Image (tube, rainbow, N blue to C red):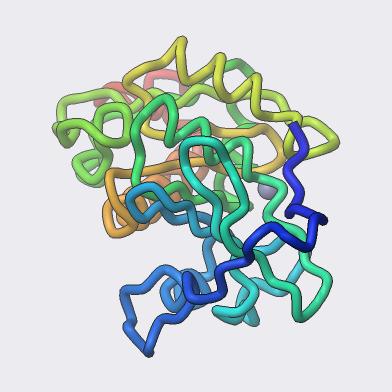
Amino acid sequence: MVLAPPTDPSHPNDHSLIKHNNDPLHPAFLIPELCRGFYKLGEKIYLAPSGVQKERIEPEDIFVLSRKDRDFLRWPDHKPLKQSACTPLFYNAYDLRNAGACIHTHSQHAVMATLLWPGSEFRISHQEMIKGMRVGGTGAALSYLDTLVIPIIENTPDEEDLREGMEEAMRKYPDAPAILVRRHGTYSWGADWEKAKGQAECLDYLLEVAVRMKLAGMETVGMDQWTKQ
Ligand SMILES: [Zn+2]
C-alpha cells in the first residue's frame, strides 16, 4: 500500500488541523519538538515528513490522516514533502496494539544488538530498567523478574515493505513491547506519546547494556553472567 495525498483539487486540505497556537502538547508542535514520527490524537494521525532533517521539521510540514480509512485530512503544500515511509508500520501499532503513539529509531545499540543476536529473538533479564517496559507496549509494566523478549525481523530495501514482517512478529509475540529490525533500528509504541517515549528510552538503554554485556562475554539472561567464560 502506497499512501499519497490526494491530487484532486476539490479534496479539502484542512490546514486548521496544524494550528497549534503555541500549545506545547499539540502534535503539530510536539512532533518537531520530539523529532519523532507519529502521533495519534483520537481519530487523527499526525505524521512527520520523510527525507528531511528531523530537527528542522516545522509544524507546517506535518501530515494529518484519519485513523480509520487513512484518508489525508491535511498535507503540506508549501513545499514538496512525502509522509514518512514508516506510515504502514505505524498503523500496525495502532491496529494491533491500540497504541496512542509509535516511535521509530535508527539506534546504533539496536543495530549492534541485532548483529550480536543473529536469531529471531532478543532477550534480557534481571535489569532494573525492564520495569520501564510494558506487556505488549500498552499493558501492565514488566517486573524486575520478567524476561524482556523482543522479536527481530529482517530488514528490507524499502521501509514500507517491513509491514508484513512486523505484523507477523507482533501476532507471534503479543507481549512484546517493540520490534527490532536487523541492521536498521526499533519500532516501539505506547498508550500515549509520553509512555511511548519512556519505553523507547528504556529499550535503548537495555539494548546498550545488552550489547556491552555480550561483548564482555556475559549472558544477558539469568544472574549467572560468567558461565560462558
Ligand atoms: Zn527506518
